[in-house]
Image (cartoon, rainbow, N blue to C red; front, side, top):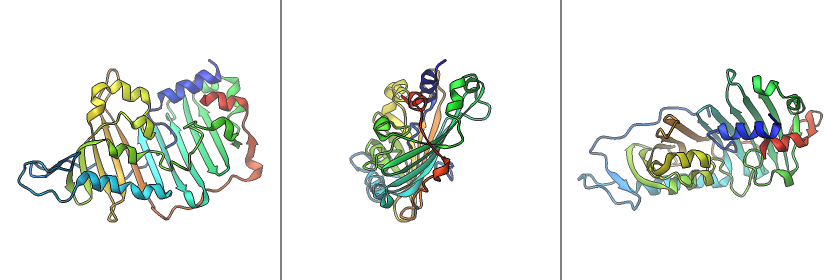
Length: 282
């Protein structure tokens, strides 16, 4: 197996596109009783007799607006892949830690990625029997940050970062796909969402979406907003598809307006990235 094939296998195995992140808090919320007003994508209340307490979908669309200011911490987790980090648009910096697989995996990857415009660095750790069998991996498991050529990572969701699209999970795109939503309590919601654009958002890979087939149009979700109405949690409940069991994708946001600038790695801990690193992610 070559380094290029190794990278293809890792990225294909990851449910999440690791430009986005885990450690989410709290439960996913539960659906309300039959008396809870249901709001369709048009904002029309169901004929339950109870008045809708505002437009639930609009509340969720509005909840993502603060994300565009680019000052927050985030986390995303699902099926053996986790990402956690921060975005700080005022300093044009971002940092994230990504993990695919675990200690018992035949092949596992950890990435510590730092962006401080115009530079980017990554510290990579590949482990497991498969990784240990490849001599070329020794050139990548350096224990140091590898400085990245921006021209070679442009458009690469694993290594690059677009400061014009600061939300790694793309929640604004996802909430636009809501097909039905109801309020389940103060600041909590549940409903269904069309995730066919989730690959564009960065939350799921295209293969996972394709495997869902028509189920991708009505994926159950729950959401929470904080007291200021800002999105704090979005959970997608993906149904079973083919050989893939049902699974949960959880995204969380916190520290709005209170994130800090990323820390550049010390100069003595930096080397230039070798060709093998770019091959791993192409």
